[in-house]
Length: 182
Ligand code: 5GP
Ligand code: MG
Ligand code: MG
Image (cartoon, rainbow, N blue to C red; front, side, top):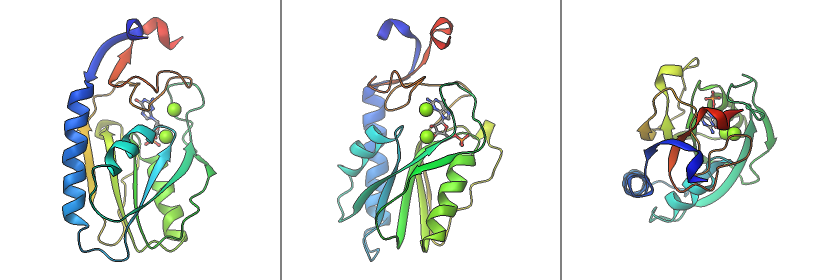
């Protein structure tokens, strides 16, 4: 599988160090928040990030998943994310994470959480591509925005992120060789 990768953008070590830093910041910021926050991972892409992040958050939290799909098997967003798995936990304060590209998916997820009564929504994304933003992401209440790395305008795979449902299990984030995007 490594032979399909043209370039590694963030190694397993770099990701691990950054995720530990993010979790420490979240632990600090949510230390006195009551009731305990619900950490909602956006499936499937955030599954490894969620697992690594929550293991380093030293607070009582609940964990859940939500699923939003906008990509199909290509590299261009359809622009209309479909919520195919909804959070089952009762929402008071929520805390979502994702990779933020145009902002479409995240904005619709935040709207969904607010419609279910979230009074505060923070966002923690491993990767942020501000250059591709089409919709400004509006945080809710005391919500904060955390990001691991600013991502250049590449379609990336690994550490949970796929191309056509493959490559999620790579422990690092990289860019595929052009022939692998066919
Ligand atoms: P947005 O709605 O912000 O345009 O896109 C967010 C979603 O698109 C992410 O949750 C992710 O599933 C997908 N996405 C955006 N950029 C990339 C990328 O570079 N690689 C992969 N694998 N998925 C991406
Ligand atoms: Mg996604
Ligand atoms: Mg995908």
